[in-house]
Length: 228
Image (cartoon, rainbow, N blue to C red; front, side, top):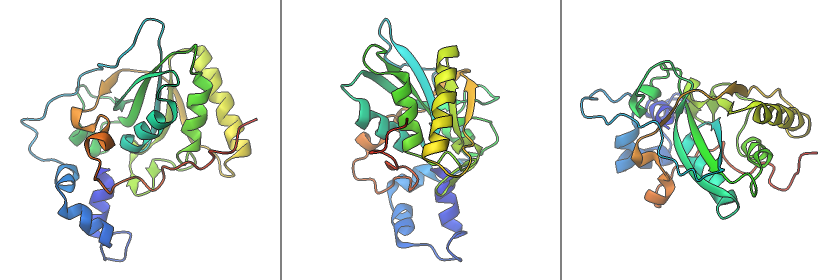
């Protein structure tokens, strides 16, 4: 989100003019929290590694698909009461410790905004998660989703075991053949160290029901089309 706000402030994509919806954002309290970089970080609370609910027998999955607010929302909307235990938004894939939203926003930490999912594999299958991942964002854009631009917005799947890796690669191949004419650039990598994002990012749209923001790249592109 921070790169969107930054770009709209300078009007880089609108020939020097800032559109009405951007002005609305800048006038709201939310924009004051999101403009990056945040220079005063003395009182920033470092992110915990994770407090995700994970009952015995639960499996985990990690996906990065741009701004984590919308990604979390789509997965909760689709799988709540269908085998989903919990979702945390956070950071993965970086080369520093104790990442914060402010530092990740710089695009220099290597971290991606991502979601960590805890699910019941007896009810909800990993393949379903990967298919939804490819249905709600544009995986052919490198380091970009809508107006959110930077390595922190890259498309990536972080797998926990060989089975997840094989499933991710299989779904990627099928999605590229059936859904996307351009080449998918999604990274498929082993899951490394995870860090929860700050509390105000968790279930953001529940905490901020009146917000007007939602990434323009996040919507059901292939909800009624099944991969074969």
